[in-house]
Length: 330
Image 1 (spheres, one colour):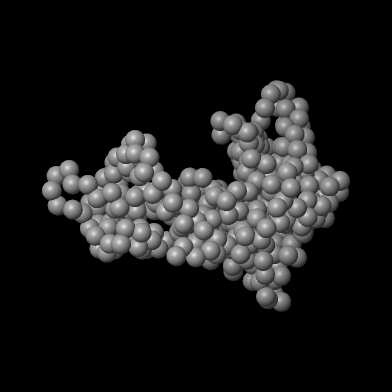
Image 2 (tube, helix red, strand yellow):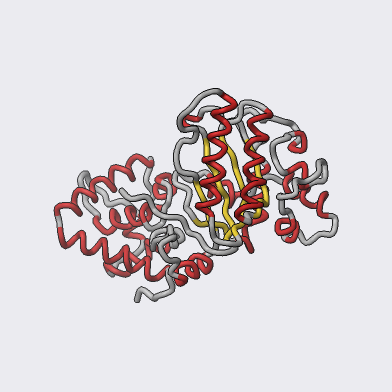
């Protein structure tokens, strides 16, 4: 299957992540960290990349980058490619270093830049065994420079993040902000099994779609959608079948009783709502999430055998999508 291309345009901001192949160590000591930082200096000078934050861990890294010239792919080809060469020379080895393609999350900088910088800087504390007690003591992060504990590299641009604080005492204000810890929204976003390629409001995602970002786009209708609330899905299915919402969320008595609208609602909650099985189980008054999984599996088999049922499900899925994109369902 062809890999989706990156969303690239001028002045875009990204959270970039990559890790070693098989979770292997990619930074074995100070010389390795310095070699990577040299790559950041080079992409700033050659490709005008703005490095706004970074955190280098033993087996992975995080970067917050702005691309004034819309050239993310070129920037990352240099960072990952050149660092691999330098790593292999230091290690006296050869071959691939990274697990594969880097992860690039396009950031709505006006809303999430500050939060993402905090998430990046808190990495040394968010491991199973914290690497330091005080983040300011971790040397391979831009955090010490952000709180004026160390001098900032000439290529590190802190102004955009500071600008979101709204405080003249920027060093202490940023430290206080980071020490508050990540908020629930960021924690839930980064804990998802498949992290979306865009972090931003629905309006931000729709603007990206309207731009029709040429062949360098990694965007689809699925990726500009936000999860649809379970309640909205239940209401839509009830309206379609002209039944009460209660008949969907409560089980029918009797072994083997079939409630197709209820099954469809569950499956839509998983696909269009991106809801967890435990949340679906709670909403539909099911004792255990495994029952939800079995029910959706049962519906999948029916949909594959029944053309009419497949059309109903697809119609409801499309209607929910159109509603989310701003078009009324009814």
